Length: 85
Image (cartoon, rainbow, N blue to C red; front, side, top):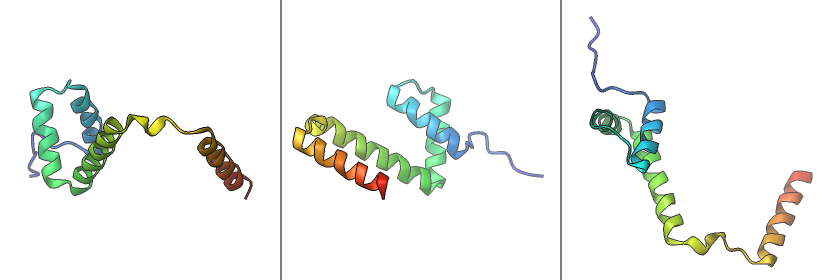
């Protein structure tokens, strides 16, 4: 007989639940399942940490999206160079 764990979720479900965490729309049962998953899944735990790190950097550095015209042109040339190679 296989033991069924009541709050066991897949990595795909954990990824979806993480979006609910960010939106503040997670139910209590979902929180239990999500946190339980993070305890035993090191890959998802690392993924969540990476996403939270990136989001914190984006929130703290809003001028990141304000590129100078010369930087935009440099990036455009680099992309074109890589496409044609």
